[in-house]
Amino acid sequence: MKNIFEYILFLSFSKIFQLLGLNLSRRFSFLIAVLFYYVIPIRKKTVLENLHNAFPDYSEKKIKSIAFGSYKSFAIALVEILYIPAMSRKDIEKQVDCNNLELIREKYEENNGVILLSAHFGNWEFMATSLAAQLNIPISVVIKPQRNPYVTNWMNKARTKWNNEIVPLGISIRQTYQTLKDKKVVAMVADQRGPEESIKINFFGSDLTVLTGPAVLALKTGAPVLYGISVRQDDYSYKTVMTEISKENLPESNEEKIKELSQRHMSYLEGFIRKYPEQWLWMHKRWKH
Image (tube, rainbow, N blue to C red; front, side, top):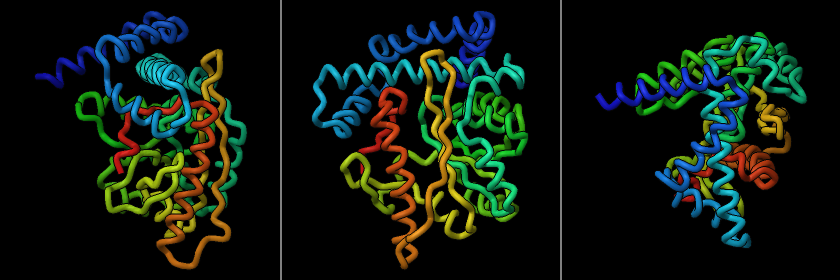
């Protein structure tokens, strides 16, 4: 019953935002941020702890400013996702400008399969949907199902509106491996912590676990690793920076190769977070282990 009630609420907000229009809905997101930061705090303690760990030299005032900014960024992304059903292909294509779109097509046409990495940064859902529409190439998106199955189904319908396919996390390794062997594009976010026994890398000066799946798959299949970061602009559009993570000069042992490749893509992400800290999702317990 709880899931149904949440889903009805979810749908209601989606319809309201569609009626308001995207620009007005984005302005409404400020109220959502106030609600989740001040009135009904969601993971606020975790966010503040993460920021103190990442930026130990920052003042409390600056930490709290970044924290609230991250809630605003999350609220904007949420509103935009809820608006996707009302968007045409042309609408979604206009939202994201990629600096190097042809890099994906070039690697795809080399017939090696492609790993497209991203992070919970800006609006990662908009980026994946828009790039698939612009490229007209099917992208297999590895997703973690929501707690509410009705919301998961709604999200998956939005994600697959233009070319994307869904690969649920949990059954994804074998399917993802086969997808890459079939010379297709696989997209995933890999900025959360790994299992406690996982390989550790340096992230903001701390030794933290990392999700090694992307590195393992890249080394096993030979697929190139492209990293896309979607940076929100002042007018709410997105500039996506796309680059290839080098696999040159890796260590000899397989474990060290996995560690080094994971370090490279996490260091790349860290650079963007340091530049635009409000646009990363600080709600995950990234410093747990």
